[in-house]
Image (cartoon, rainbow, N blue to C red; front, side):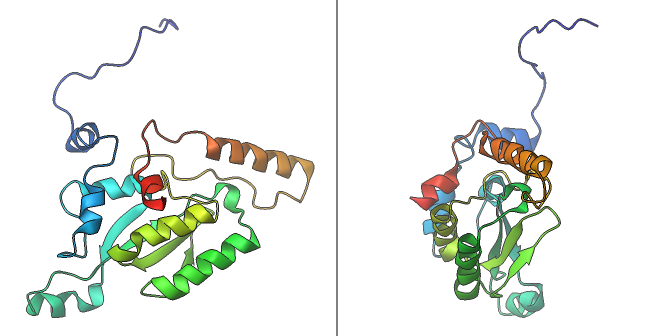
Length: 194
């Protein structure tokens, strides 16, 4: 086998629907901005339902009231789960206070969920609070870029950078990898934060 680089890999044939969606989405923007302005539904429609995952969100609905809403001929009560990108799981006290305040005041459940990926998630963000969520993360020096779907979801490392020089070095590498572009696409989230 040759080690010579012969250019990009060309895949011939029909794209999977996921790859078609990426190709046709205007660099993962889709029509998310328009969906956020649509007050007729609490959810995202069409390809946007999947595109929001590239921006760290999943659309969910409240299972506890699903059948009741269906009987009333109402759509499910949609809410988003938003995952933060947090290299090494390290967060400052100031950042923690901001996310705690947001969770208490602007999510359905008033809580933050810690994950096994060294980060946290908000559950129960209504569509009208998606932009303020991204703005709050941006103001706190955080984001949700590339925390869901078919991308590297976080940079994991030791969670105690002050334990030793080696732990600190591992954390510094995690931060460098965190700052590296996760994907060659402009982030809709940054547009939301503006």
